[in-house]
Length: 226
Length: 296
Image 1 (cartoon, rainbow over the protein chains, first blue to last red):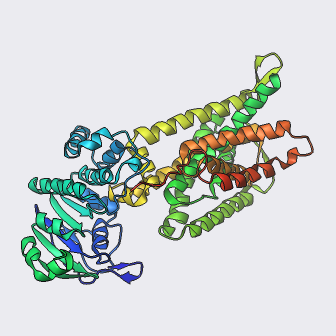
Image 2: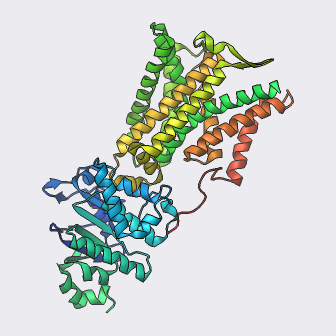
């Protein structure tokens, strides 16, 4: 995978099981975001293969990939700043036609993040950082994805909000949503994940059950500040 | 009093023409970051299509309907052939391409119809005057222009606030990456933006042609510049801003024409462009453009 002429991912091979929470941890510039954007189709892989439920994704447009059941809550939230909270949420369901179920899902998101209900007619650009992150996750969930890509959901948030976001991630895991979580906050990510990969400058350097990686001295030294 | 009323109607008619152009410019800029210089040719093509269809024997009303459909088609082809292959290229490549498209269309029409202006007329009732008060004759065409613009602006507003496709269009203008990630079919949104933009420009061109009684292959250029000024005044990319800017510009032009000494009126457009520079210096985000930074 090349990004702006520079090869950002090399021989990265990973897989996610249905219903599992897979974490990818690693420092800035390791290629985590590039990896997720390639899965979503906004970046194109020059070689290699991405398969989802036996469908090849590498030649598909982003909207076709969403149609197959993959939703993406991107790094930096990427909300529609001039549109309201409710418009943002409904755009998450832009490909769905089941109006009644969409209304129900909006209520479900308000259940996960009650503050979004208070802010529903407010422009997304005026929300606080934490509220924006909740909206980004909520918008991705509105697609009723079979695989949810979460890119740095805790980035730049106060510790209390990080806790809140990870509570919701744990809840989604209980509800058997398949999750691919990319995080710099390795401690939180390894706590909640089933398995994890460690990425460094475009390579996967370690992989295994999250609890084993959390106990690995090398991981502890590099990512857990131990 | 009569004079003021007449000038008011003039200003509203002029502003309406600019507004119909400015909406298309604003939506296309919003999504593609493209200042579509060929938008003036979409205005010009409208009345030329009506002319050809009338020669083929279609009554005026039907000719207008068919011309609008064809103009939308021209917009789609323009995007497919000239702009879509440049997806991901620097903005300036798109800008220069649109200049090329503009020249290509102008010269195609010159080759087909010659460079001289052609007489253009609508149904006879459009040339009549509505006696509103004593001494005040309001041209029917001016009322039709204003009425058409209002109806189309209201319909367009409903479209972008009430329909999924319309909201997707605003969303794509807000954040292209996010639009892709939530699963908006960008190709379709862009196509619809060009159909709407081309249709509105063609409507403006037909009304403008009827009002001045003639059409020529270069008639789109000045309205394009004026619509561009209107969108800058209103806040580039903002649709309500574009409409507001168009009417502000219409009023300013009529005000300048009416109040300046006769020797200076010829410089009306120069004064308008000085105004553009002043706006860019003092309030580059325009009247309604959001100056607020995205909060994180």
